[in-house]
Image (cartoon, rainbow, N blue to C red; front, side):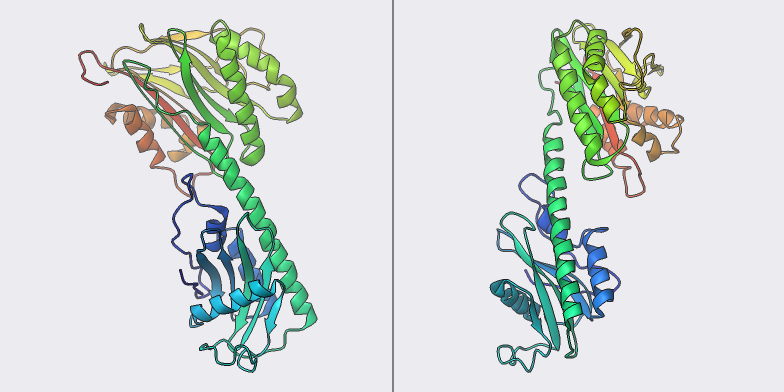
Length: 398
C-alpha cells in the first residue's frame, strides 16, 4: 500500500481492514491520523519545523505500509517509502539536507529537496515506524530542529502506546457484553452499547437464573477508563449476586460490596436489575436511580418503571424493595442509559419517542438498531439499550 501526503486541509487515511477482533488496531488508527491525536501532532510538527510536508509512516507485523501527512501533494510516495525505509535501517534520526546532492539518493526520482525522519519507538508490538518531514528545496536542519523532531517522535510513540492500551481495553469490554440468549424460550432479547470514548461506563448484561433470566443495565457517573473499570466491577458483583434470593437481596449485597470502592472513587452507579420468570412473564426489578425503563404493551398502553432507591454509592438505602411488572404476550421491556435521551431532545420526553420506536419495531433487535442508528459525533454521552419482547400468542417466532 503506497504512502500518501495530502494537502493542508486534512489527513489522508489508508483503507486498512479491521483487526481480528473487529475494531481498528492502534497502528491503523495511527496510520490514518486519528482525529485529536496524531493529526494534532503532525500539524504541530509542520508548524514548529516550517516544512512543506510531514507524515507518520508505519510498517506493522503484517508488512502493510501506510502513511498520514499534511503538506505538498506532489511528493512521490515511492520516494517517501524509500527514505523512511532507510531511516528504519539506520535506526536513528536520518537527515538529508540536500537529497539530490547525497550520493546514496542522488538518482532518486523525486521532487523532494530536503528530508528528515526519526524512528518511532515501542509504538506497538510487531510494528515500527518513523515521523518524517520533507521540503521541496534543500535546507539547513540545525541541532535545535533535530532535537524538536526527536521530541515530537517520542510524543507520537507515547500516543501510540496509549492508543493501543485503549484499543485492547475496548476489545475486552466488548468481549464481556452478553451474546444472544438462545435458552430463553418465548422471548426475543437484544442489546447494544456505544461508548463516547474508546471505553465507557455504561454496561448491560443478561444470563440464566432459576426459572428464567436476569437482566441488568448500569451507568457509571463519568466516562473513559475510570468509569469502565467501575462498570466491569459492578457487572461482576451483580452476576455474583444472582445466587442471592431475589433482586432485592442481590442489590443489597452489591451495595455492601461496592460501597467502599465507589466512595473511594467518588462516583456512583445508576442501576436497573431484574429477574424475569420465563413461564409467567412476571418481571421483578430493582431501580437504583435509573428511571429509564418502560414496558410497552400491544393494547396501546405502556408502563414507566419508577425508581425507588438511590444509585449505588450515592448513600445507604435503608431498604431494598423489589417492584413487579408483567410482560404479556407481545409486550416489550426496554431499558436504556441517559445517553439515549440525547438522541432526541435530551429530556424525559424522549421516552415517548422511544415508545414510538418500540411499537413500530418488529423485533427486539430492530428496537436496538433504530436507536443506535441515531448515534453520531454530536452525542456527548455513552448510549446503551436492552430490549426484551415476549412472543405474541400464536406466533411462529422461535
